[in-house]
Amino acid sequence: MAATADIFGVGRLCRHCARIRRKPYAAHVTSTPDPSVHAAEPHVGAIGSKLNWLRAGVLGANDGIVSVAGIVVGVAAATLDRAPIFTAGTAGLAAGALSMALGEYVSVSAQRDTEKALLKKERTELDTQPAAELDELAALYEAKGLSPATARTVAEELTDHDAFAAHIDIELGIDPQELTNPWQAAISSAIAFTVGALLPLLAILLPPPALRIPITVAAVLIALAVTGLISARLGGADAKRATVRVLIGGALAMAITFAIGHLVGGAVG
Image (tube, rainbow, N blue to C red):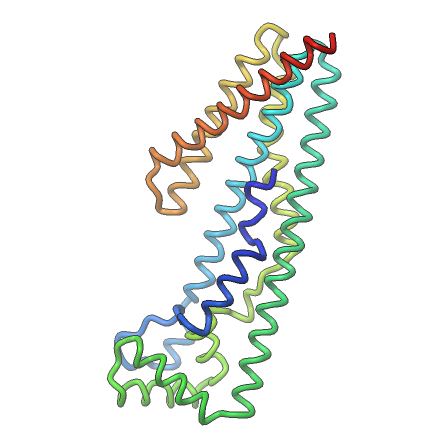
């Protein structure tokens, strides 16, 4: 269940924040920009953020599929009674969804606090040392490939237009209007996990006892292939490799839990 909880995790966040001052990345400048045009363009970070949310949803659903599939297949290997399978599957779904929601809320709250602190620090620096900040902005554009004279002109024009927006764009890559929302992260994560978890739960409960496990395994592998393909497309990765990887992982999870359920069920029975 914890496989996708670090998508917005504090560990990755800290590494990201540590790079902010050393490696500005949000601005892509090839010529002296018109500030009005620059302000009207969609923020690259906002587009990437939306893709990350979508990818997180797909991976959350994938986590729900694998987690609950492992639980219900393991219980089904130990008993033919529908009640224990339903109870274990439902408990796994609820526990997984709540765990995902809590993990997302905590980690995204930490990320939001960090973003707000960085924005506040940048505004303070602009208020207390504007000359140094102008020099820094010019240096950043010069590092992007502009000549020193052009970089200085760009920095001065953008500073005159909106110094704060210019600095947070190239230095931090943060849009103050697009700060991460911990409640949105928590709810969407719980929903994604629940949607994924419902598939193996229904697949194990609806068929007759003799077909429960084969149908569940088939349904889970098909669903994993779809989520693996979507995730690879969103991330620009090799679709075949990503799909095969997630299929192998899901198959191994079900095989292991089936073996455990069979052995434990036989020993207890």
